[in-house]
Image (cartoon, rainbow, N blue to C red; front, side, top):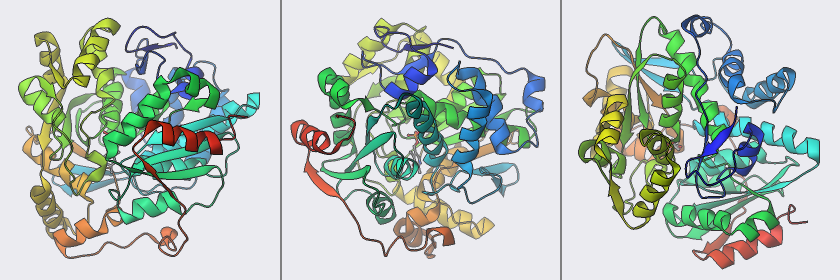
Length: 465
Ligand SMILES: *Cc1c(COP(=O)(O)O)cnc(C)c1O
């Protein structure tokens, strides 16, 4: 399996190379040259298997010769050993034929642990072979950073620098980034919003001299290996609900478009997913794109679902590449127009987008009302991101005979203030997280300035040698 850049001007790479480099050198994102297919009987055979076994079967066709079967089995087992639920990704029923896929049983209580824990183990094995070391740089609106720090803390293969918007992440998210004491993980609070953090990371990767000197690697959702890890729980949940003999709908609380793109990959591999509903909060660039065909930046507003507070959805580029017939030059052109403010999807591309996807939007008030409603009708307490998804799922429900699964992307205790304000109950941290509020914090505040951040990283990274 080879990987090509969405901008068509970077070398074709193996899985291992694409995983270690993250962003392509032409500014594009790596995608597999073709989608491996799983036949209906191979999908049916996943029913009842342990999550780890489903993970091995779904991911193996993408790996090429990166790992032996035994190595990969060990990677997967280590990655999910720290999860707080034997099913890893259990389903909870919230209505007659409606479900929440609980993706919050990992160490940082959000779905990003599924990918990040796996990537940590893959990096350690892959780099351990060559004795190499990398500098991981990432931007986060909250959950990615804590998941990365948790996955890489204490590993020999990597130093990790996480940029997050100062004062704009929840206290639990911040503490998860600032309390690990291992010397190879670094939390950097940037005086700017998430897009400023993301722009700094992109600029560091586009500075090829700095990139090579620091051996930069990205574990943001642009990293193909992360998307791949997220494909697995679509399969495990769909077969639990009767796939492949029945089709399933999914609603995905969306920010950077990584999680919902993983659903698109599962469908491309043969999983019968009828529709993928993209759920957005008031930062609704994707919802507007579906409605109007115009993909226009509109600035970021802070909401109660901060991990979805973004203006530019990086992984949407992967879908655009496909919608434009895998034309790297056309994709590059769209991205250049987006830098200038936006673009209009061409007719065929918009029609294809609407065929596979629908969208819904929930503002802060609708999100709060949904948290209260779910508590009243089921006793469950959902987090604001999941609640955005549940609103969109209801508005786009359609045929009630098809099961609707909403991805439960975080644990309510990660966002206790918003949840308490919505339903009057303050969600408690799971027992395995106790002590988080007592540990000392370690963080560096930095200006929104490329040079300053580069200097800081160069001083602290061991990969620079
Ligand atoms: C990251 C995140 C999202 C958005 O996921 P994308 O893959 O970026 O679209 C939604 N909810 C939570 C809780 C998250 O951490």
